[in-house]
Image 1 (cartoon, one colour):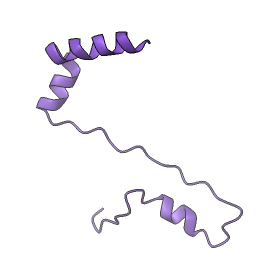
Image 2: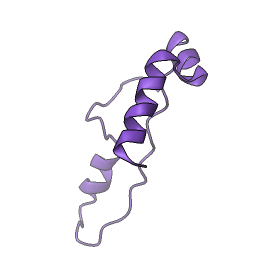
Image 3: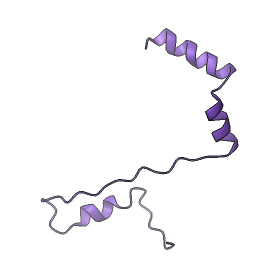
Length: 64
């Protein structure tokens, strides 16, 4: 895709946004966070790296 074509597409979307984006915005839809698969690292004998990867946001929720 060329830059002029991209700019023309963006200009068109300002006038008439895609319907799916309008519906998602109206419903305040947020896609689920991608799940990160923790792989065992042979250089991490304690396993702390895989534990840290289970909480990509850095927050641990007390709710289940």
